[in-house]
Length: 160
Figure 1 (tube, rainbow, N blue to C red):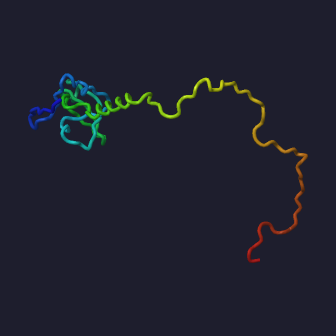
Figure 2 (tube, rainbow, N blue to C red):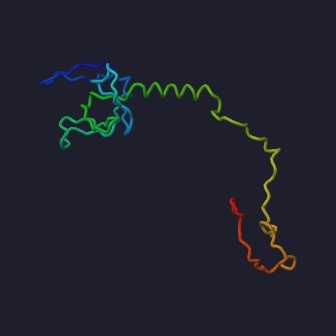
Figure 3 (cartoon, rainbow, N blue to C red):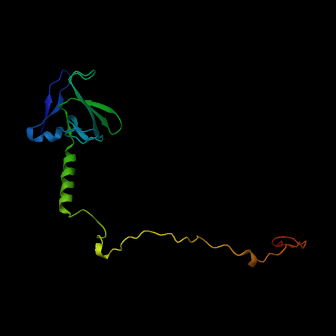
């Protein structure tokens, strides 16, 4: 893959020249991170996400193009030959495959228990018991009638 300059009426534009063994750089899916040719050599602060491909002849798309969204929400259009899938996507993919291959099952934590040591599950049978503290028998309650004494209620005053 090389970045080439294509002559244009005002300013030359940059484009990618992709070889046959590098066709995976052109497999666009919606939402994947892409790298425009004009930002290939520099490190842009913005990230571009692929949105849609427009063919030649669609209204407003003379020559066709790709529609992308910047990380700040701006919608940008690029020529068909000036966009690839970001190379760091493939580095991450290779790294993830390497990690999965190096570890065994990929499961963590406590190993499974031997099935012979497990209890056999039984069906729960309700006993009919009640929940909470049982009510007190009314005959055991001591009920006294309140008699007014005429005294003051509450805590006595401090200055009294």
